Each structure stands twice: as C-alpha cells, then as structure tokens.
Length: 403
Ligand code: FEO
Image (cartoon, rainbow, N blue to C red; front, side, top):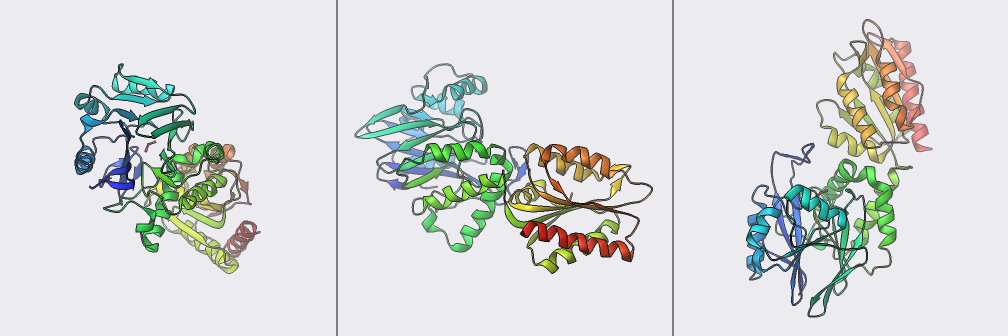
C-alpha cells in the first residue's frame, strides 16, 4: 500500500486487514478494518502508532515506508497513542529491527509496553501537553485523553498541518484500499463507513462516551485541519463531520437517542413471532422507523449498533425451560456490559408449560434504567384478543418513542 501525503512532511501508511478473525476476539469484520499508522518527518522521523502482525500488516506498512525511501530502522521515535495490541502487537519485531528508536507513550502506556512486550529500555513517558521537537521546524504535542477506550490513551498533535492523530477515537471498521481521505470516497461509500462507524462506536467506544465528550471539549481550542485515526477514513476536508458524528453517538449514552425502535427477537416455533408481527403492525401504523434483528441468527455486534442509537426497544422472546430464551439472556448481558441505558422498552413473548422469562428478565434489566412499558405474555399461540392488545402495545411503544 502506498503512503498518502497529508502534507509534504506528514504521511498516512495503512494496512488493510481482510480476515475471518473477530475484532477484539468478539466483533465480526466481514468488510475488514484498516490499521493506520502515520509518519512525521522533521530532521528526526516519528512513526505514530504501530500495527499487529495480522494478515500481512507489517509488510504493507513496510512497502509504504519503502515508497518514501525509508525503512523501520530509520524511525527515531515511535509514538504509541494507545497500547491495545492492534496498534502495538508488532512492537517486539519492530524493536528487533530498530533497537535505537525511542518509544513514547503516557506513563500508563509505558507500563503496558513493559507488561505486554517485556521491553524496558528506550522508553519515555510523556506528560499531558508535552512537546517533542523533531527539528526542521516540526514539533509534536501530546494530550492525554484517558479512557478512549483504555486508560492510557492519548492523542498527538502536529500543528503545521493541523493534524490530530487520534488512534481509536473517530475510527471505524472497513478497509480503505488505495484511498484514505474523506474527499476521495463517494456518498455511497460514506454511507457504508457511517454504518461501520456506528457499529465500531457501539461495540468498542460506547461505554466510554463521557470520556469522548471530555476529550472533544479538551481539544476544542486546536485548529484541527485533519483528523487522522488509526482505523478508517482520514478526514482532511471535513474533519468536523467525524467529530460531530462522535459527539452525537456519545450523546446516545445519556439519551435522547434517535426516534427509532430496535426490535430484537427470537422464536422457537413461531408463537412469539405471531405476537411480534402484531406489535410491528402497531409500530408501522404510527410510522416510526425500526430495525429488526433475529437472535441468535444475527451477531450481537449489529444488534448492539441499532439498539444503541434507538430510543425504543422491542424485546420478543419465548420462555425457555422456566427462564429467558438463552440467546436473549446473552444479548441482555451484552446490553448491560455496554451500558445500553435509558431506553423505552416493550417485552413480549409466549410460554408453553408455564411462564418464567419475566423474573430473569427483570433482574437482567434492573441496572439498565429502562422505561418499561407493560409486558405482554401469552400461553401457546396468541388469541385474537391478545393480538389486539399486542397491536395496541406496538402503537404505544411507537408513540412514546416519537413523543
Ligand atoms: Fe484499535 Fe483500542 O484499539
């Protein structure tokens, strides 16, 4: 992959990862992900963020370096904004090729360099606001942005080009190919990246939304011309677009989210599905948009994205062996771990021998502070009267969400 110039001294070098592996061992990435690193040239040369040895990423970055007439051994400073191994996993191999480069990170980051990679020498902990003079009029400045999404995270600022290197923040899933800049992608491609940005945010960043807001506020005095994350598009034309998008996503964590409903359902033999269809008729009658996800068929990663951005949830599941349908128990546990708080929710479902989902469900959602509408449960398949109640409850959910 060739290097892409942000300025005549600042370059994006990226590797596209196409794999069946799960991101973080959890989240599917059927459309891949990019690992972006950045090179800044003064009299000294800095590399900002690294890669892991994943589907040939080191070779892709090495090719980009070669295109600039450089190799890993030419790097004077390696800046690690974040130590999660997608950005640091190749550190020992880098160190073997380049024993002299100084590795810079926050103090917490340096501790992670030691614990993950057993490297003790050539490390420098940088403080909030500290600068690094590269010579030739080029300087880097570091700002701590803790908990986006690990405690050690920081961003790096290059004032000449106005580029902010943000690592995970403002990133997305999706590979880039030969283009990296926002002005090089079509509207359809931007639609794709917007969806993958939301999924990335909901899966990885959402629990830390308060810290996203704090970081955006802290960095607001910078004259940002380019947002350069370590996953996804580099925003040189409209950096405000991705900043605003992240601020909006962060706001969903405390509500209000979008006036939409995310339907999450599972059914064993179709009885719960009959009731679900009735609720959907009620929602459609009110004209409120909804997304629909059947579990366990659909991966939780996608469910999480729509649930996170929606004000309303419809949870439809049967009782299974005196308790919740097991895939829904897993889904609700993910919702709890990812703080899918403050939603307006309707739960429905059928039972066969006897109910039981209710008790386990109520315990599972207790920490989520949901506004629960009155649930509807029925024995076997729903009666005509119950169908009518379900349609009405669908209308009520839709009206509450759109109010
Ligand atoms: Fe892209 Fe938190 O690592």
